[in-house]
Every structure is written in structure tokens, then in C-alpha cells.
Length: 95
Length: 491
Image (cartoon, rainbow over the protein chains, first blue to last red):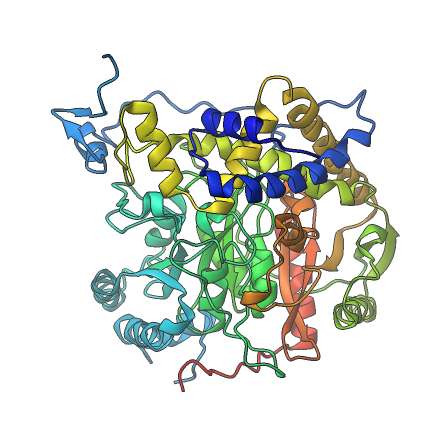
């Protein structure tokens, strides 16, 4: 299974991970090897099989709608790399 | 005082006032200092632990202990959020993260009076089976081969949790298991590791890796300890939407080691010519032992066993790529500057994540991307159904399944194969259990010809942990395995 340079760079863009030029070749080999490995599933007959997303045989439980004062904005912002007033701060988006 | 106490022994000493929590905590903090070479802890919270111990001693004096385990020092995998104590997931991207809340599991431990000595090293975001992917360096297995001085991996991802219990750097520990991350390191270190049924233990406040597979559990010296710690951490939690509503059980008090009349399944798909002779022998010896103790052996088939690993390496990275999207340099963790917002995201994630995490995010993004979603992700979910149904069928015939925990014993840190797929094969015996959502335990059974521990795995149907622990106790009590560990790191 080939993993060409362009699709790898595209994947990096989608994942928001910068891929250095000098890592392209080794990463392509690694991902190619993993893809070849997972491709094994294609030969399994699954026509009448339903997918399992979660192994718990239980429908989602709703919790009581009671207000709590956990996780205040002030607490949450303590870990923000940059903040202004009561907000997370990021580099300018609109030019 | 005897070194290498387990949870039950420590609770008895505390009850008899033969030791105080403060004394016990000091002993273990001292052990941690002497064992620094092993690199088990990312953070040691000495001050907090001693303060907690003092409070525990006060409670005991006033007969207000929170449980019989009040005052016992444990270690916590650095994946559980702990209030005001750094929680890094062994990643650079979270290297400065101090949670403002406590995970349900660690809160349950606090409610029982257990004392946290600190946060245990693990593979980055729990992705690995060697502990080598940690940003803070490899954990070193306290075990060494009798014919080499080389350092060995402790297994992973809960490598620090397993090594710390084996080396007496805590009395018991908490780990998490997504594809074998409790059982494989337990097997490599001669400890007991329990992966509970999916939903038994709350995932709230645990740094998420693959949400449909992640489950927390204990790593301990004995099956009794595993039952006790499991009992403490389990139970319904309204903060986790996949938490089971089943009642909490008294796993420790209800331990009963009889296996008379039980049917033990031996799956033919786990047999392999590649299995080391010593592991095969341990497996055979255990079959014989169970038979002698009154159980019946039954040959079974789990036809999709070999499909489990490729299925796992689609589902786990897919869920991880989604879960790890939250690390963007905005809300917590480190930020690297960029020319604009997108550039900042990319710089932060490229600097903050290690190679294995990046590989899994890329693979996960690939299998979820338009055009491949059905061919990979949905396909894997369908094969997951087949794997689950294999086990459902098997448990119509047997009470439990016995297999080796790992295809080899611990290997050299510097001897890891270059191809990531070769490393993934470490989890070949443990991964199917996570996909099926059922419980399993790894217990030490014997040592191989190089004096390294061999673990065996027992598996039962969903929510049958009591039966699982009972059979494990039967095996443990019959073989009486004592780890003959040479504490080379103290010398």
C-alpha cells in the first residue's frame, strides 16, 4: 500500500499537524505498513452485520436536570495559555 | 515491618495500630526516592500525601475512618485528572495542565480514604505497549533477565502503574486499559491487572483515548487487592453517559475461590507455534491445575480473533483523532505561536504530540475521511460485532476463557522493532476483550527461563467480574507465586 507525499500532506492539513519534509518518507512507510495491516478486514464478509459502536447493552441514561456550580469560567480559564477578560484569546482571525 | 505490603496486609496493620498512615506514607515516599531510576512517577505529591495521611490518622483515632483501607498510599496513572495536581497524560502538550476538578475514580479513592502518592508515568495519551512513547522518558521494568543486564520495558500503557506496584513504590495503583494497557504491563511485571466490563467504572475525568474502549482498573499484588480496589472505584456515575446502572457489588467480601464444576474454555485461535515454550507450558500447567481443582476444560473457537487487531487499529485511532482534536493551544496545555490561528493550531500540535500519537491521529483522520469512512470505520464496527458475537456464543458453553496474557515476556527497551505494526502485535491477546467490552484479568503464573514473569489471562462475560476474580483467586492460591525480584535499583 502506497502513501504518497501529497495525500500525506493533505492528511496533515486535515489533522492540523505539520509534517516536516525530513519526516515525510519515514512517516509514509509507517502509515503504509499500518494501512496494509488494517486492509486485512476488507476480505471479511459483513453484508448482514450491524455495526457496533459501543459494547454496553444499555440505552443512554439521562441525569436529573439540576443546576450545579462546578467548572466555573474562572476555574476553566486558569489553564488557558492566553486569556482576556472572561474569554480564551487566540490570534486574530479576520484580516 | 515486612516490605512489599499489599492492600489487605496494610489495612490489617493499620487496624491493629501497628503502623500509622503517616509512617506508611513516609516509607513509600522513601521507596519512591530510592527508585527514581525506574522513572515510574511523573509527579510525586509528597506534601499533599503527608497532609492526607495525617488527616487519615486523625480519623482513625476518632473512629471515623472512611473505609478499612483509609490511609493506604496508592499511585495513580497520569491520565486521571486530579484536582490541583498536574495531569499530563505523559504528553508535552499537557505538560503544564493542572486540573481544577477530580476524576470520579480518584474521587472514589479519596472517599475511601486512600492516599495518592503521585501520578504514574505511562505511554503518551495511553498509546503504546512499551511505555517508550512517554514525553518524560521510558519507565524501566524492575525485573531483569537472569542472563543480561539490559533494561526491560514494563509494558504499557500503564507501565508506571505496574512497575510501581512490582517495585513497592506504592501499595496498589490505578491504570486504564484500552487494548491491554492494564493486563500487558501487569503480565510483564508479575502483578495482577484487572480490566473491568465497559461501563463498570466511570470514565469521567480520565483523559480520553478511545472512548468506546477505555476502562479504568486496578493493578495490584494480589487478586484480593484487585477485588478490593475494583470495589472502591466501580459504580454508576451520572457524569458518564456510558456508565452502567448496575448496582455496585461487594467483590472483596464475596470472594470464593472454588472452581468446582466450572467450565473453562480454551480457544484454539490463541494457540500458536510462535508462542515461547515457557508461556505454552504455563498455559498448559494452568489448564491442568484448574482441572485438578474441579473445573472442566472445553475446547472452543473464537473465529475472529485474528481480525481483532486490525479492527482495533481502525476504531481506536478514529476515536483518538476525534478526542485529541481538543488539544489546540486554546483551552489548556501548551501553545506555540503561529502566523495566524490555523498556523498556531498546527505548530502547537506538531510540537506538543509525539510520533506515535501523530501516527494514530493521522490514521484515525484517514479512516474517518470522506470516501474511506464506510470502507474502514463502518467495516471495523461491523467486524467488532462479529468479535462480540464470538464471545457471546462462547459464553453459552463456558464460564470463563483461559489464554496467555501476552505473546512474550518483557523485552529490552532498546530492542523495539522499527515497524509500528510489529509493536502492535504485543496486544494480540488482550485487544479482543476491549472490543467485546467484557472483563479480563492478568495474573502472574510462573517465571520463564530468564526469570521473567509470565502472565495468564482469564476472561468472563460482561459483569461477571466476581466469577473472574474467584477463578483468579483459585489459581493464585494453588500456585502461590512469589515474585523473587532482586531490587537492583537500590544498590
